[in-house]
Amino acid sequence: DGGITQSPKYLFRKEGQNVTLSCEQNLNHDAMYWYRQDPGQGLRLIYYSQIVNDFQKGDIAEGYSVSREKKESFPLTVTSAQKNPTAFYLCASSIGRPTYEQYFGPGTRLTVT
Amino acid sequence: GESVGLHLPTLSVQEGDNSIINCAYSNSASDYFIWYKQESGKGPQFIIDIRSNMDKRQGQRVTVLLNKTVKHLSLQIAATQPGDSAVYFCAENKAPTGGGNKLTFGTGTQLKVEL
Image 1: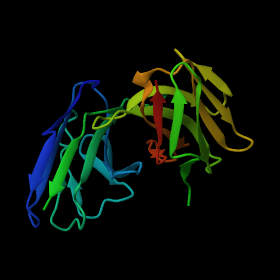
Image 2: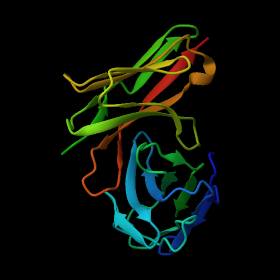
Image 3: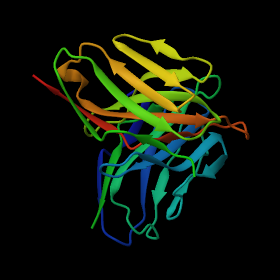
């Protein structure tokens, strides 16, 4: 999957618990992204980071948090404040200009009961 | 607000036929468009991209057409094969003002190839 790894592939949690999804890339890309995908829908941007130690909220950031301490890593925490956390989560990275192509990881399917 | 939408949620084609997947966009400032293929349970894979200064771009068995007049994007797949069965997404990048870039994705079209 283009040098981006996400773990685990499947994750189960009880409601009220925070959970952290891992995303690592070895492509030397500066930019990294987190998306959420629900059945029958496209990808919605949660958070993105253009450079280490900096990140911005996407369209649906409420209930999520991220960190970017290393260029290779961009973990996403789904907090108990996220009202509907069950979804397929995708991480991506991009080299940036002049191409805007994003490389995606295999995804993590999170189920919260 | 700005959006990227697809005309058809599901497209069924016979093996060997050509497939055409359409996408409408509303942001006239978008400078870059990209098509992804997503198989069930996997991450999206890059197919082909096109910049706003182009009308057409060809890859291996795929062609992307951009009509800026009507804000329409299409993906043509020649000689469709069973392995082409997947969900196809178009995405656009609005010309960034802050130095970064974000893609806005459409909802996707499910392509089903019938034998």
